[in-house]
Image 1 (cartoon, rainbow, N blue to C red):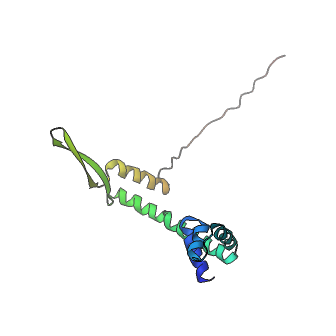
Image 2 (image 1 turned 90 degrees about the horizontal axis):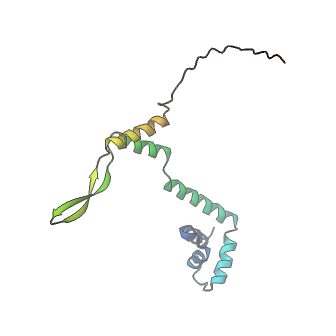
Image 3 (image 1 turned 135 degrees about the vertical axis):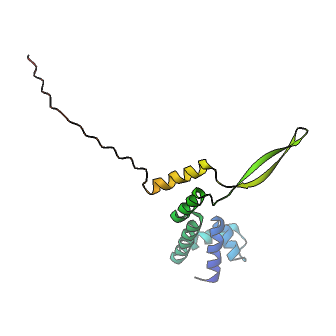
Length: 144
């Protein structure tokens, strides 16, 4: 892959606009129609397609929380180690008030919810019901 093709790919990944990406990678091209046609052609080349797909997978992995991240976060909430930012409105007198942001630890309701989610994950709340039933066979004969 050439340097210009790599620039095209990296620019394309910003907003998926092939025409704009082509103009950045090949600044001598001024016409949109030429840039659009050439960008479309570049996107069909196998190694360019592979490069773009790999980079998109990397971006997806960076953007989406992993299972471990979710479990660590829920655990930090349960243990009261996390903080959230909330807005508090305070009266200043004479009917005036002001808002400010404060940090607060998780309350009991938030800790309980985190505990529930973790418990579900680890199967701690599976209800087992033991049903014993004696079934007696009943025969009914009808006279015609």
